[in-house]
Image (cartoon, rainbow, N blue to C red; front, side, top):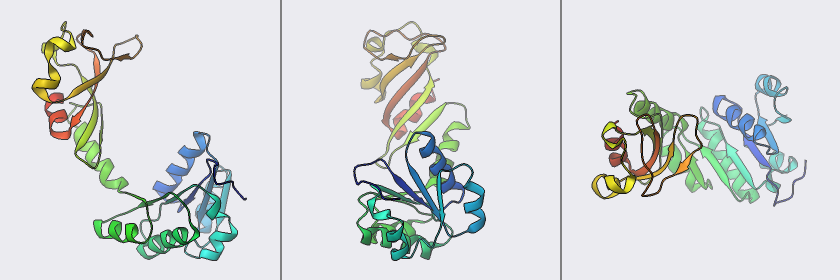
Length: 221
């Protein structure tokens, strides 16, 4: 299964809940995905849904070399429960020269080790989802994404006090520290926000800014 280095091939190592979800989503987006797991039952389970699934020891660099993992531009190490296997897999991919390695971490210490052994990006899927749900459960936000530097993007309802007013008139950026990116109205196309964009009751706004200011704005809804 040799790949050219400029292809969009992605190798996913680990077919637990996180890895299988990522692999399936990537395949549905049109990417060429190779999924690898040492567990025969998981490989069998996903062989009917994923095009390329292989049972192999992901910590063995020679095995990964035989599977041409070095020719994939992206690798995702989705191993979380076995920390040693996670670290050794990242190390093997790094030694093979894979240019873009993503890895799942379960603790901050785990993340630091992954970064030191070659991971270019480390994610905490459980923590990220927990934080997202915490913001959504109050009903103030319809969607929420926070970045590492304290910056967030959220989907929320327009505050009632803003109904019938243009964005420029509200001076929301100057007074509240957030930027309204766009407006979605029922049965209408998405509108990129402009100073003369008038908000109406029931409008859905896409806003961005420092996390605390985005939260404060959503609380006005």
